[in-house]
Image 1: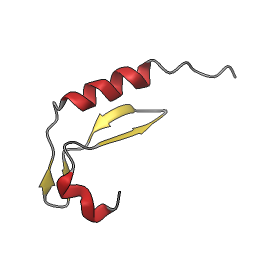
Image 2: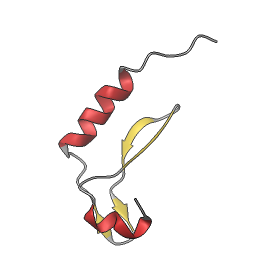
Image 3: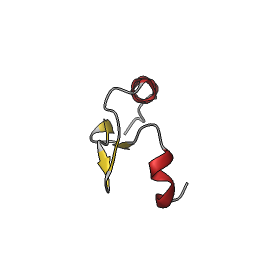
Length: 54
């Protein structure tokens, strides 16, 4: 996906090891829903990933 495709996205999120999954509300002038079902599915999947032993 290219940045120019973002107006066609249903939802947007950012993720990393510190914040987990966070919804993105706006990219440029395109707004995204904060309660889209895909966001909850991604959050559940992310939490289900087992951590690595250090």
